[in-house]
Image (cartoon, rainbow, N blue to C red; front, side, top):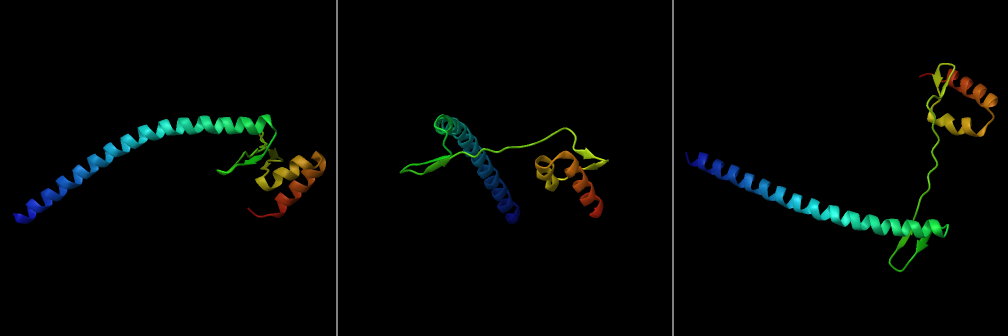
Length: 114
């Protein structure tokens, strides 16, 4: 019987801890959302400065901020003779004339086993 009482206290303690953690998490999440909004406003201000002055980065006493510009290429269908062009052939496809690329890609794809 005494063991049952001990287990009951353990379960009760566990549930109290769980409830307190949930309350703390909810409080944290509420405060975190507000802080993220403020941080995003500051981030936009810094990015605007970089864009307006055509800069990639700025060093300050507090730290350095920078922006990264990514160029992505895509299309709905990259199928050549029934085979999909893999990522490793994308730059080749974009940088070489179509006929030369088509020949090279088809040759490479046919020589590699999948």
